[in-house]
Structures are given as C-alpha cells and as structure tokens.
Image 1 (cartoon, rainbow, N blue to C red):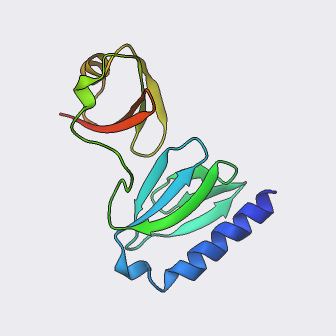
Image 2: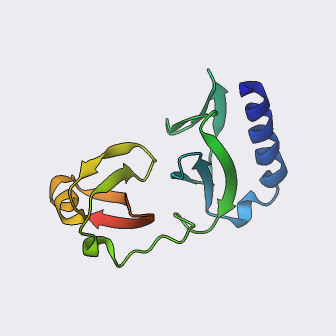
Length: 133
C-alpha cells in the first residue's frame, strides 16, 4: 500500500511539475483534513521510510496523505479568518504544518496560551486561521 501511495504521489508531482512554476505553494492534504502548504519555488522532496520529506525538514506520512495540489493561496480552502474569537466552544489547535498543538476550552483561551505564530483552530465543523502576536 505504501509503495502504491508513494508511486501516486510521485506521479502527481511529475505530472504537475511542468505547471508548478505558475503556482506559489504545493499543498499536501492529509486524511484528517489538515493541510501542509509548502513554498513551491525551490522545493525538494524525497521519500524515506514511508514518509514524504521536504528540503526544509517537513515530514508527512504517506499513509496520511490524501492528495497533493498546487495553489497560489497558502491555505486554499473555505477557511474563514474573521470569526476566530467568536467561538465559545472547545477548539483543537494545529500548527500551519499540520501538527496537533492541543485542545483548549475556547478560542480566546487558545490565543492566550499559544506562542507567537499562525495556527488553525477547529471546532464545530469549522476551521479558522488565527495569528498570535
């Protein structure tokens, strides 16, 4: 199964390489719905031990990789950027690299606990992007 996924990933990269220069990011979408956006210019990738590994050290398990595509948006989705602090329920927080950071009682609680950076908050079927400064 891993070899098949690696082959498919390789073929997608090869097929899209001719048009890669038209886009700013390669987006890796994982089966849990999280995405990893990588700058396409100068991007290098290898496959090691069932993982896709980029030149900057980003590692994504091939088993968790659902699809790959090029985009001009760093987070190409229906992610809203305005309603992050309006969420009163529990939120799950992920790094922009897709790594799970933690669960918090509210978006405000997450914001006050997180270090400086950009994060994705998931709650109630919605995902929002926040910047903590």
